Length: 306
Image 1 (cartoon, rainbow, N blue to C red):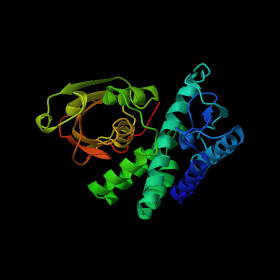
Image 2 (image 1 turned 90 degrees about the vertical axis):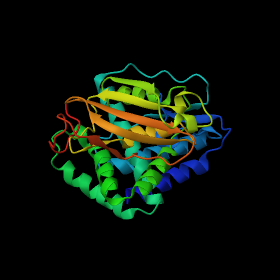
Image 3 (image 1 turned 60 degrees about the vertical axis):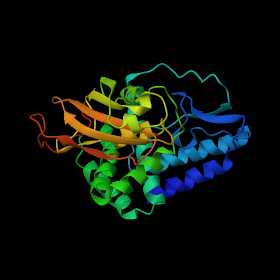
């Protein structure tokens, strides 16, 4: 399956890397490292070139199922505290960012499912995706359909504990990003790749605050998040949280994350509460039940539309 292939490619790239290398690989158009080489350095230019080729193979493994997946433009350059300057953004680049984000999430989850032995879930997700890809009207939605298929099959085939293990392992495949406001940073990133349109996040008191024994105030509070035009939004009694969870977990290493109290605020706006704490188990990392109200009704599968 694709998960095992992606794992093998990532392992080969990591075997070439070294912690104090002088070279790295980034995409010349975006200035961002392809996911398979993100956070890695290499001893010399030749070795970094090998890693760049393998990073291309990682994308190719996913492109077998989604031919619309954009090609990277991998460049080898010396490690520098100053990032390379990306080319000016075009509407096509906006779709590229969206597509690459979806596939980075999908690839990490496929790898995680394979590593943890959930072959039946991996196979079911791919079968669901290939079935839906035949009826999705816009090929630009293929990447989102892959994320939705993974989320849907994990929801029905894995226990809550198994879902948490898969998502936490997938998040570990991305470089750590410590930020003062991790919830706001995650929502800002989702907006930058076109996954949501407009958001707000505010800390609210939580009953667990008094029991938490460390960390800054933000980490000891329950955050209330609202966002609009969520590309994975459904009206089937739940709100998918999988991509939000993976991005947030990489920003709060060593902490648990719980998504609770999902609610539809309007036809296109949603609310979630997120609790980050220093102890306990994460929860709601794949989807969260949505409170029944007049905005919630079953209108079928909802995918990204123009």
